[in-house]
Length: 397
Image 1: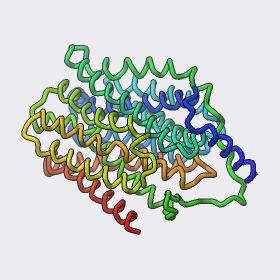
Image 2: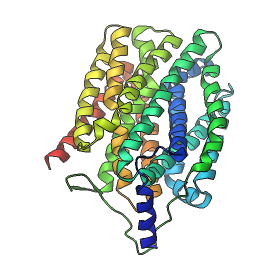
Image 3: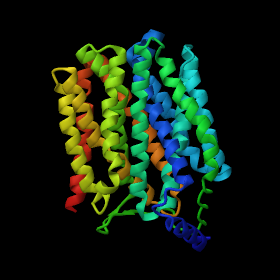
Image 4: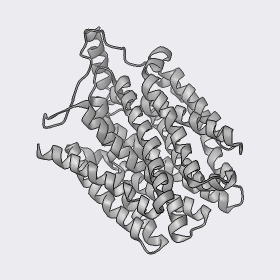
C-alpha cells in the first residue's frame, strides 16, 4: 500500500498548475465559505439588536460556528474517507444552506443552531480544499492555495457589502446575508462531481507522522507550523468579526456603513492574494510571514488610532494586505507536514481553525465588556508580535 500511495500522490502532483474543473469547484467552495464568514461578521451588530442581547452573548455565535470546525477537525478525516469527496462536499453545501436559513429565522435557539450548522459545512470545506489542492497541484500547492484564498477573499468582499447595502436599502440584513450563498450552493452542487477521491489511508507500517521541510532543508515539527496557523487564523477573525462593531463604537458609523467599510479589510486581502503566485514564488515562507506581520502591524495602527472613518478604512485595507498571505503560507506548511495523508493533515488545520475562530474573537469580546473595545483590540497586535517573533526565530536558525 505504501508504494501505491506514493504513486497516487505523484500522479496527482504531476497535474500541478492545471486549473481544471476540479480546481474551479474547490475554488468556488472556498469562495462560498469566504462570503459567509465576512457576512456573519457584518450581521453580528444587527443580530445583537434584533435579539436584544449583549455583545458578549452575540460573540458566542462565532464560537458556535467554531464548534462545527472542531467536530470536523476531530471526525472529518474518517467521514471523508468513507463518503468520498463528492458526497462530502455536497453535504457541506447542504449544511451551509440550512444553517444560513436558520440563522436568519429570528428565533434565538434556531439562530444558534444555524451558526453551528454553518460551522460544520464551512469546516468541511476548509478541510477538503487544502487536501485536494495539495494532491492536485503538488509542488505548486502554495500558489493554488493562494489563488483559492484570493477568490475566497474576493467573494468575502461581497459579504459585508451585500449586508450593508441591504440594510441601507431597507431590505434588512437577512436579504443581504441569504441570497448569494443560496444561489451559489445550487450552482456549485453539480460541479462537485469533478472532485477526485480522497487519498487512501496508509498501512499501519507507514510512518505515522512527518515534518515539514522548507526550501533550505530545515525540519519543523508539525506542532510548530500548526501553532503558527492557529495564530494567523486568530488574527484574521478578530478583525473579520469585530471590525464593523469597532467602526460603530469608535466613529459612530451607521450599521450599514460600518458593515460595508469593514469590507475594506477583505479587499486588502483579496488584492494581495490575487498576486500570491508572484509574491510566494521562491521565497522562504518564514520571511514572507515576518514581512506580512510587519505590514499588518502598520495597518492596525492606522485602523486603531485613526481619527476618522477614512483613516480607519485605509488602515483596514493595509491590515488586510498584511494578513493576506499568512493563512495560505501556514496552511500549506501544515498539509505538507503529513504528505502521505493530506486529508488528515487538513483535519489538523481545521482543528486550528476551530480553536482560533472559537477562542480569539470570544476573548476579544469578553475583554471588551470589561475594558472597552479599543483596549481589547490590542489583542491583534499582540498575536501579530508573537507570530513575527516565531518567524524571525526560525529564519535565524
